[in-house]
Length: 358
Length: 233
Image 1: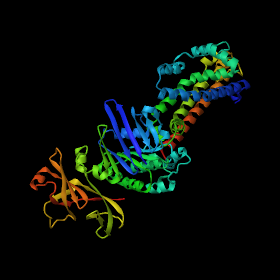
Image 2: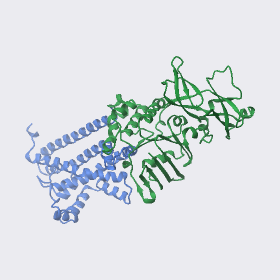
Image 3: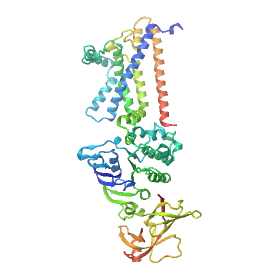
Image 4: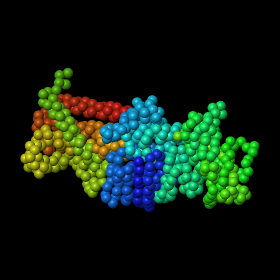
């Protein structure tokens, strides 16, 4: 699967001029509100007609303004999950879920109804009406409805933004299962770093309607150049590894990375599973000698690869720990006191690490 | 209680009124939905002119509307002559003419009610249906129409009630012929013009009240049922 998007569009003062290519998996469109990410995804869905541009999925050209080509939204077969669930109030949950099936072409292979219902945990809601569902339940039904229309591509426009933290935590695991257990490629719009770190394979960073950065999630999220201060504070390292052991009494998982093992607390996973670790850069301390008598479980030795300044008096230090890249965000003053420079050997003390089974 | 028994002539007027009103509502409904769609969704030059024309029967004296219908749809009128010659449809001095007059008089009420509920429909739901593969016609049939149904039914009831009471335009356009164009209202009027006709007028008045109340209750009940289906379990 290759999705290729190049769009120019004007809305009053705002100019959208962005393009990217996406292979399968989850591609995140990431940026602050007003950066044009929703407009871009709406153009992909066919909800807006761009002034100029070309959009194609594999060989199938959907928009080519030069040739005057524009495939209307109902012929694109791109599932769309909106920020608000937009369920049909006059239909039951079951009616909503099966709505798209009526319009899917006969040769399309839709996801099996039972499997999707099971995947999203909505089996007990089927006879209910949307008005009687909680926000989280509604959003799960909306995701199921899009999946069951046999989409070639799933577009998700901040599906968690309208929910409170508790509901977000309720839905994220379902999104992970969706990514891992279906073959539908996903374009995921979000302004939340942790969502992107947890879900995406590739990230497209948008700013003022333009693409600022594009690449694998582990690279883009660790860059000091993330769009806002809040995002920079959230930035960190994303590392892939395999669970080596799980210690139930301590609820502690041991994860083997390229050159290190990391202990992750409060995680329930099976040994042998491939997982992804997210280590926020602000939760990594640096020491020039191996610290002793410290509560932190994970202390990695490595060499400084690069140091990046920002204009907030903070520096982001990129450390190569035997093949695993870890980022630490410390004050510029600490950097001077410890005389940090590329090539120096340091110890990274990791305070928190989040584990994402995949 | 002999005075309550309806005469044959009165029964004919009641049957005719029911027939005329039903046909008027049924025949104007598709046009009403189309015009409401154009007014609510369309962007075209002359939209306010169309809006004005639709509402004209509400503002004009009914006699004027009836006279205009006579000029346009009479046997010698431009539209009436055309319909007579090519389609064999004649309106003047027939019950079909009474139905046309009732449909025109009820049309603004029908369009208004449908248009208001169309304006209230969340267009985002229609977008969502489109992304699920539904073409615009299917979106209208499976999403928009079910959502505006209460408004459509309310409009139909209003238009029906208006038709039952229509007098001025009908009598001007198709006159007052017993068994052909003499509707309930016209029959009551006729009774009041002859000595000793008060009893007949009273009987028909009671019938008119019963029919109007039944229509109102039916609309309330249907609106309640649909509202229940949309909003609750």
